[in-house]
Amino acid sequence: MVHPTVLSWDKMQHLIQEVLHNLLPTGAHLEICLTILKLLNFHVNSRNEDFGVDFNFLKFCFDKMKDSEFGVNEPESDLHISRNKLKFLTVLGTWLGNEFHNCSRMISNREDNFKHEHISCIDNLPPSSDIVNHIFPVFMTAFNLHWQGFSTPVNEYSVPSLALKHNYTCTGKKQMMEEEQTGPIYPLIQLILEFANNSLISGVAHVVFSKIKYTK
Image (tube, rainbow, N blue to C red; front, side, top):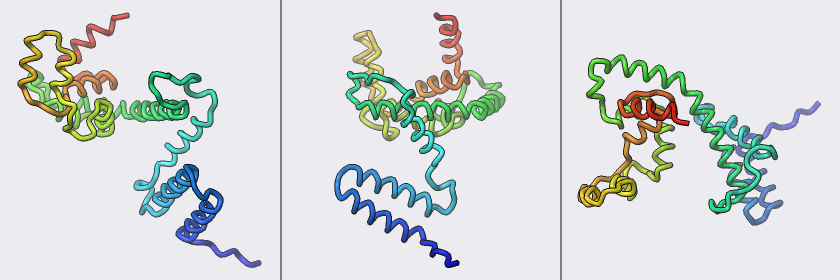
């Protein structure tokens, strides 16, 4: 019995590329297929699976995207995005929510350790940026930063622009316009992460939560 020759991955990738170019000479389908091939190539050539592609994530997305009963039936016209993209964002949001929730116990442990370390100086806690980076996973902070329009820690979306939008006194506006500050509002990010993770640390979070927990 003659055993077939086992092709190396590089040779197999080259053959797949040739087939794709023959079957899909031009167009978006070719670009998509080649991109998927690049992902597979990146994963195969990674030194170990920790540096490769998370195929569990890709499988989750694939299964949900082909599930006709998952997601919304009607696109929201004012968003000006396609039905397919809307469904993918719903899938992605579901996956992210599950992954964030899986961090609950770790965050709770960090919260307990932080409170134990600062029990004697509760009125003089570290800056919000330090608390956020110390207690919450970096991907949660990155998610909130990008959601608020910060592709980097500092950009054109400034603290005054947000403060002015939610300030309703004329005198306050003039004063804030004179104060030049740019960058994320970490106390706000801290509050969002405290509430989302049920990990109340700051005095503000405790006060606000006590006000809203009985609100219907």
